[in-house]
Length: 159
Length: 159
Length: 159
Image (cartoon, rainbow over all chains, first blue to last red; front, side, top):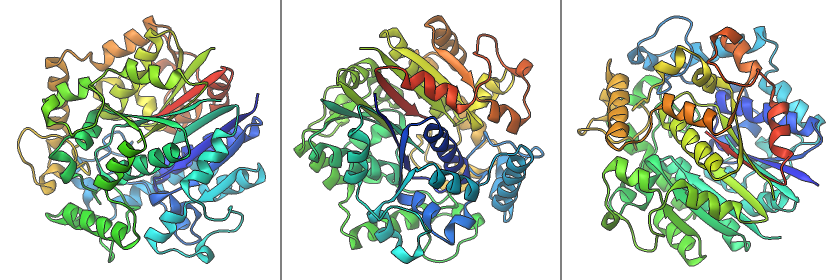
């Protein structure tokens, strides 16, 4: 039976975007059809420049592992978002987890459809030209829902 | 084949609640049966007064677009939650995205079932009388799961 | 028709982990097969020591109910994460909501499969011996996706 995996990416932080792609590429490698819908902050993943600025924040996330004990109070200080971000990137690299650009390329190679949400483009004031190559054309939620629900076994994940 | 979309709303911030309703109403407009289950902070969406106080926070979200560059440190200052919230509401309005009250009404008009979680009501100390009109009666998770799983093609989304 | 519920736990905060287990155990009690995949911060739920340190943060969550009005600014102060956490635990206890250890045991008793993500173990530098008893052996995303997609009616939820 045909299985389709629809992945909704609303978050623009690396600790959500990375797992979204890891599950999406895994599903595609297993032979499932995969479509990813990027809306709200998630639209940044498909934006040429913003893609490079995706971060992780330690603020409000008491579960984040820090290289040394950091009282919650200090997580708000200048530099802490960059510290957490570079720490996570280093952790990924040391463990040979692909980075976000590599995951994007893997997704495209595996035929994962990347749907930019046109409402999100509008809200953020982004243009089609701002998007990376290889995405579908911008669509509304109905196109994404149609894609998923057309399968005999639709699966949706949110990040 | 019958498709049912179950939407679980655990968040009480506008940047999660708005997409939940946008996807829910779109699915309903496409002819799918939609049920939304409001639990944890999400129960505030169905609360007469709290509904009007839903906010967006810039804190701990380095992906949020700000009208001017704001160091993470300043996001915690008094007034910043209100600033981000009114900024997002303005952005929505300018782009003719319906506001939360309009989305709620659209959902009801389209026959979307709104299930308040009775554990959440208990936890927050809310009464049935505090809820807006037109919701289902408060239920447990099993009623919601039954609703979704009864379909031939169940789809669940989380916000 | 066979229904399988796959629950992805990426968050390590109580306000996500508790609902994940509440929905998972409910689904299992209703006769559905349930598998939970713990990755990223979620891996802490299966870690003997980290499990006891799961918290809730008021920072960046304007929807969290506080025992008294707290300006956003103060949520970052030392002690506030602990205050919010103990407040939520008390609220749960008073309303007879099981705590996280009880939910874990219920899940095991009901035959819920607990899958630790091996990439997360690697990233966090945890060892198999650090995990609680009764989990499946560490797996990749493909094992989890196989588990879910093998059902006639697969349902996935994310927390």
